[in-house]
Length: 277
Image (tube, rainbow, N blue to C red; front, side, top):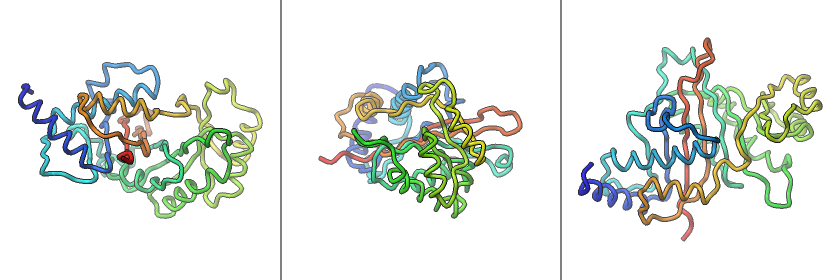
């Protein structure tokens, strides 16, 4: 893109970003995206930061942006990076999702699940693991803290948009409380092996007794900080003087070929709201 076109694209992008109230970004399939494949991120946080920066930068330089398209919800994705699953291959793959909620009291689970279904061209996600925002400083994670999100997930299971739901980083006592209270029981619980090198025996025994699958993960407690997200957006937008954005949620999906256990596609969906001025 020559300098004149770059200037025009930057101007249009700035107008679109400054007009929108909600900003949604889809990284496309990281397995096949050459620009991101060359990098080897050291952590999930670095991977997400690189993805946001690269996707926004590519969107500005390749999408045909026009300030005539001013809209309150701005969709930012690379057209070629589609992850649509064809009806013929749907039975052959498993669609697994982890949803990181970044704000307490915000009901955005349904919105995130619907965006994932639409992006992947499926009517149902095979599994969704929820990672709610951490408790406020001085508080500890509690059942009351989990209940609103879990009730939303249960509704999506009843409407057949999700097949199975799971949790992340619950100890045995909290997992047991959730299991006893929930109408639709957790099918899995992720454990961060950075915090415990060996699965706690009481958690292992409880999970075995109630047929809950224990999985491991290496996601940090905060997948991406507000400052790092803002920095990635600014860099991706070539340091345009744009408004601040507040991260609502991040959804990471994996499409796995069942028979071979390989990842066919992986990507992130990100939703942010314009910070109050």
